[in-house]
Image 1 (tube, rainbow, N blue to C red):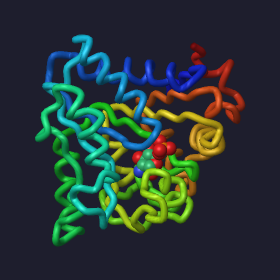
Image 2: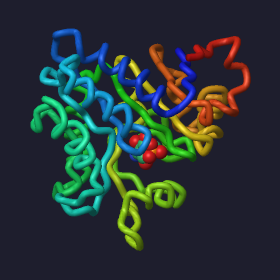
Image 3: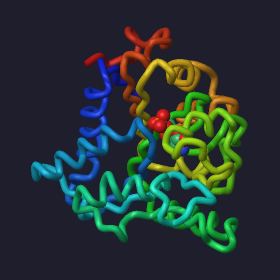
Image 4: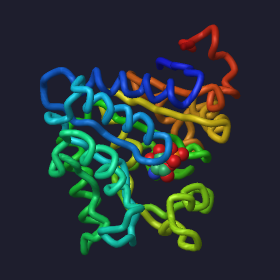
Length: 251
Ligand code: GLP
């Protein structure tokens, strides 16, 4: 595992964008797995800036989302699909039909989960971006999710719904359920890039990186992957113990 400690969010975004740029700039078609949420805003905005400067193209990239809420209207501003539309499709040359996500409006959600699982596996995602929830979740795999889990409908924890309430209009919280790629689906990607910012992520980051690999901390499953980069700011890194001398790359 490569761990990069950056001083602040801006530096984290630069490092994350560097990894993404290297991945999408080979001149060959690529499949990029994307996470949503606050942590991803600056890295994706930096990707858009690099595109505007002419240094980066997403024309050959297919994008696969990790998860999506169930129960929002298709046009809902809070849907993760809309997040990608706003931050990448409208800002770069990423084709709208190159964005793939589970359809939370499908009449048979279990069949839709199977379809999406199949599509993601077939796509062979080369680089998977990940955020981390304050309770250690990745995508919407909440504590207790099996490391063998695949794409499915899940019930969100109260903590996750509280944490994500800020994205929703006042008084209307996030839906209770979502479709998420499973942990095994995520681990099938060629490379993982986990990004975390802020002291409120410090406990989750230290348990995920330095605790045992356990289903009570879903993000700890990344320890089982052979090619992982973790980029953290000083707040998110603040509880890491052995890092500086062992594997921390300071910037
Ligand atoms: C959300 C998403 C995750 C995301 C995480 C962190 O609930 N399902 O994919 O990585 O929680 O979100 P944020 O970056 O907003 O803290």
